[in-house]
Length: 357
Image (cartoon, rainbow, N blue to C red; front, side):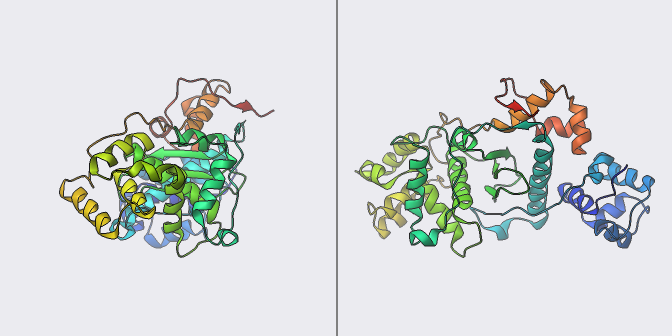
């Protein structure tokens, strides 16, 4: 290899395979000590070719994975559920896989460019709006010229504004999504757990859009603010207030199908706009819990599409118009062909992309 071995990518490979240094050393069967492995990951020494081959075999990666001149960084992370319940190794694996997606996207966008048909997300300082997050949500609806009523397909809107959405199974229900601001020549990226109901998926996506707009720097109330943004963006107060009368569980079921948001989000919204007292909000949440609706709501919004297409189109462009094979992509990514096929399914639709001359 002409490029030097990138120790940070060795650490990343270990991370996505959920292996500690000690576990990887054991897999190598005496080829390395843990101290030597640590020095490799920190870039203090360069490995011999036979060691690289053993590392690739143990981690089920190609040797090319370790020779990319890439800067590995942590994503901006936001959660909808308690982080403490998520095992550190599982959390690291999700973050690691997201970073692999980011590095691969950077390689892919060398050859294609995205078409934007909506204005990009603005960077807003909430302090300039008195931290009126709902007003910022309403301004985005105006910026995108959205009609009144429910948003039909939020994923499509976000992609039209240049956001890349990567939906995959996080392997846990304890984390719904996180995002990375535009940087390193890449567009903003939102990572969404595909293993969640579509109504929750939409709220998670709107939540992350709120972060991208409002939180260029961390803020102690950022999770609450992102929830407020998502609620107002998906369910504008002026439009939904009258929909809650008369309030009942069956009414929340009907509104879920109309607005494309969960019953729990609707109950909270009804309380927020003054249609429910504190006592009645508590009552409905207790009823939801008693009936098992907090784990699985009684109606599913099966009409919601919310399927990301940008990444599929990028891969399709490489496989058809640029004449790459899956094996070619695997060599670029440093992944086995089976992993490429699992992570990047080939779509049937013709890509709407322009090749870069």
